[in-house]
Length: 590
Image (cartoon, rainbow, N blue to C red; front, side, top):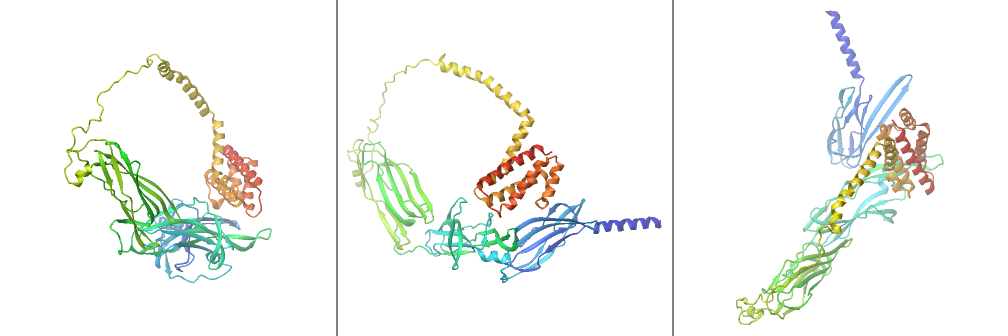
């Protein structure tokens, strides 16, 4: 009985030692940081695992990661393995926060890290170290929101222009990413998109020479009075900073730093429109306008239609106010208007014209005056209201029925007598007809009849022939494999082909395409992509040595092309070589 106890004890002790060999822990760069600093969190393990799940990082924004690093070494015959998932976090508010538990599965067992508490304090002074890449990046890239007018009137146009200033000491060669997009509550807004074609300008920032690009221009029309906030635009920008290291040619190498930059909140103080001098015909138009009322004819017969056009043209909130109404004599039948807009939005606001076209049909003979129509607007430049009035238009209906007593409708309306319809008001409608049969050749047994009847029968052998060719193409396994390989290679290299005029962007896109292709084909991560490891995996998949050599040469070209000049012919040659190499790998890989 005692021997069994001893065996059980040693068995449990052995299991405990095996369990103790697995280490999975959380490491943070600091446990106390300012709200303007960043926190690095590493989840490190000494054995490889699957199904890694990070915590939700409550109180922080993830600005970088996850980045995966693997270290595998042998010292004196003893293997040392380490795998790390790294995240870069930016605190969102002050306080004490907990980095929760991360989980991973290793050899069928689930392991969890220990929570770590981190304190976020007020902003701290960034060390002004000229050799610190983070400091250099923060001092040389700035995001600014320029507002054309911070104290506008209600419904007056303002423009917000977002500019990113970059000094000549750093560069940005990769695309930035939007973290927060501005929301314009209580504004009518429209973005003026530059469709990604950023033009580089030379300018000044705080008295120093900078380059800048205009990221976005937005036109706003405030719809409320008082203080209105414009939320900031926030970007995650990869910045290349010169380091102290040098390459083989003595040139300084670049270090990439990811920085979060923000344009900051902007407050707009919106003034109400003045009450003094506001006309009764004012319907909310703000800007500078012209006004016109016209008809396409003034002389016509009863039951004949005409078009009455009311048109407002100019600059301002032309889509945002009520159109002036039209009042006509009761003897004129008026239909709902058709609205026509010709409005464009530029950096200065909306401009153009809007028209409402009424269809008017008089019912009786007589003269019908269309009284002047008034339109009022407020001009922010003069800070005054302006009222425009149209000319009086008189419609002369020459032929048509009269009211009872022979009076014209206008006379009846002025004398306030009821309108009585004439018994002869429909005498102009023609009731008798003289229809004649149309002589056409018979359709039955005509050429069109036989074509429609026999056409479908003629299409049957054509469909059979197409079906046989399609079946033969599907059965051509080798041909389909070659075509698929060519399509796949061109798909991965499509982005590189679009940037063949820009050397740096082209080789960066091609390197990314080669890595993505390997991820898809070999199921490996970026951290494992050494040239020797790639060659080993390709050899295991029966890829020829010549093809592997070509692939390694492509990777080498991508690495050195960033620091050495390359002609357009070299770029095109490397692109064609990449297409051919990826196609060959896809044909040979098993």
